[in-house]
Image (cartoon, rainbow, N blue to C red; front, side):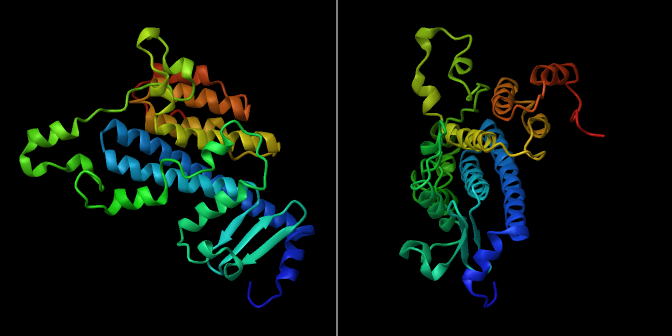
Length: 294
């Protein structure tokens, strides 16, 4: 930014080559953040499968943190942490706001917190016609306060790593308190598939809606739906790429869930990726590392 007048910067970024550069740069950054969020979501699932309760929780937070950046960049908003400026598109042109002119809470916000505040500010004036928009553009579940507590809290039964409490009473007592339950392989993307094959009398819809992974998957699905609504011609966010990562990370533990994730992704992206054939090929080649390796 240097010492250039803000009006000149805004004008340059809102017209001609500057406008094209700004949009391309933010879209590529958005895609980068999306894939980080996606892989962290896969990591969250794997950690839960292995009963790393606290680390799954922290990983879930970072999944959300990168989703927020991906989503804001997609709607042409970003934070320049080097020079402390907030850029956004107001519907007519790019606006550039220095940190000193932000809200009082944003002025003192840390590197993570400021992104959450921008997310909350952006959701008010803009109408997102998305199924899960209000749900995911909130601080529900995996927020900065919870992340800090999980990482650093030492309060007994209320801080971080509560699965390790009672260690001083012996292994049996520790495990009795921990009662490890690996995440089951259930499709969290669709309530019908979630309860598929189960006796209706034994099905509680709360099990589906109260699963904390919903906020993570719905965040990613909202991004994909937004991308589809914007009708951006691009070759970066693809079901194929999501499948390649899923095969590496999820195939051994989450066959049913992997299918649901890819079906749901393709429903949004409409790239023509044949999910059924991919999964059949995975089943025929259980020992391979990836269908996409050279």
